Image 1: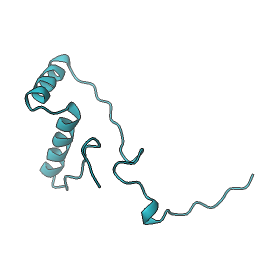
Image 2: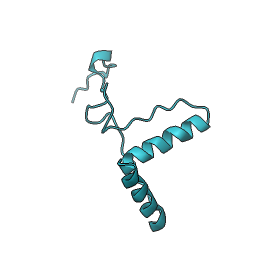
Image 3: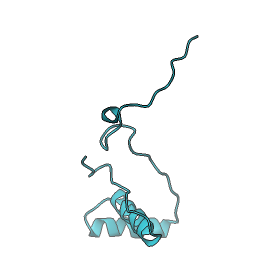
Length: 78
């Protein structure tokens, strides 16, 4: 079997934010009380748990002196 050498994709062929695979999933576990409070907060703010998580991750990055680069795949437009 012959294998082709893997070459780097041109910039135009790279994934954009709305392409499948350009975002990674994350599964977390938490206590029931925390889950309930986050669901209530999301409902009060008329948003999703995913949007709250993205906000929290970006706040953590800022707190640690990093750029807030986490995006919500449901609202990101590139």
